[in-house]
Image (tube, rainbow, N blue to C red; front, top):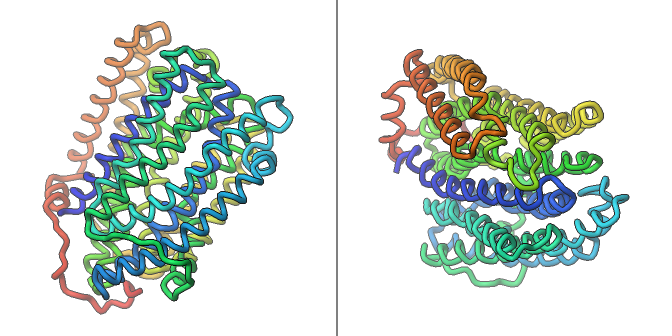
Length: 535
């Protein structure tokens, strides 16, 4: 299967999940707006979700996948099964202990870490603590599920792991639909959503567990033991968890700072949901597919293939995300108005703030996606320390920028800090890959990048004037159908203009598309002795 087809397999499942996520957020915005219950739920959910991405998705996609791939290469399925059972025993025991400790300390955690700004607001603090307590066991399910997903990705079975997250949105949409049918108040909706998150974790774990069994690996429970393989995993996983979850770390910091201002937490969450669509469809798909493919190429000594995988991944991410970033920057207010503006979501207050945050996130989108394309170049070589250092630097940049801008800009200042930190991290990752000789110089790629940027700028200018021309049809007083058809027509026209410009300027060509689509895994490609690409 070609690299792009693998991206498409993962992206299709992710797209379904993100599209359902749009539906979920639309219903949630209508039911809760940016009020206190929305702030409480988003802050409470941010906490276990951050842990999930730090200690599950980030750590296991970065540390577990290369080691699992090595076991398959060296000892076959039996060795991979033994390694997985060793990890499962340790992981489950550690997660159980962590969950018990966090549940007992939840009031202190919310007060001093998650949402310190809620502490002096009667009812809001207590609600956040209760919702977080209900949802935190979600971490156990999703961490074990991330391990199963890493196994499936290493076995080149991508779809089950990609489709499983959709069930979180399916369940939460069902909860919101039931709440609307029964006429429940905001407080009851918040509690229903929290129990829905926990139920979704169980369902998602069941899906990937069954898929792993169907792939021929049945995992049994082993008594926790620190074997050499488990020790190696932990050494790699701690820095990888920080690196892989850098965006979530910055979001958690942003949530804590934003809790000092009413509606800021939920405004950031609503904007985050929209920009997560292109980030998830492109960035997550590239990261999930590239890491096991790159690990396999390096383990077999196929350095030409490894360099080509990295270059084509960056080419693909920029080709797809630059127009998305331009559209989010220019069209943020019509997008927010169409997606959220109804019910408790106020047009005169909520829409402008969420739109400004979304526009700023759009500027950071290429950086967030490039980080996911660059980090596999380190993780596949079992170097998780260097990206961790860069991640720590970017967190420092994020905190300093957010604290300096929040007093004057409010929630949009936190978005600026996140975007700046993303670009700092991406540029440091690229610079070190080049310095170490792990990034092969690709002249066609270097020629295409400025032309793709130019094409995105042309599209942005056209969309800017088109938005003003159709302002009446996109305004708050326009019927929903009119707003939707106008916005979709503008986005479709902008996309067509971008592709015409990209192919016309040479930023893309049909030969590039054909090579990426038809290109299979070159397992028989010659090995290189260039030490610049050695582990």
